[in-house]
Image (cartoon, one colour):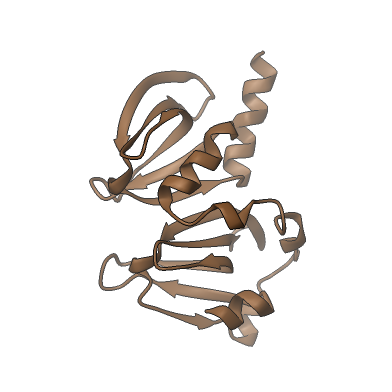
Length: 172
């Protein structure tokens, strides 16, 4: 994985046997606790936000082949490079703590792998977050509590979250 990070090489990460999922992008940090990458959106043909997975779920990865590399229509990786304090992010708690200032994030949990929670972190402690939900029309909803140990994916700064933030600013 170190070479993939150094070379900024797009890779596919396979989460089998834990979950039947493959994630794609450029890894920017990996340790036993987290795998952080700039996610690739194949529908847009460009890199689209950050994603963080649990490091111990990474079973295998592979570099993209030539055909897959040709799917990059716009190489905008530099828009995401160097924006995060990677030296301060070494666990899911660290990640979430850094994201308390971010307007909108997405989290997936082990309890419901088919849906995610979109919203803003209201408060955090080492065990849980208080999370204010937002709907797809940028209306704030209820606040829920999510156990940090139940979170298996964190996403932020994608076109979807940016669209919600723009909708919020138009309502203000």
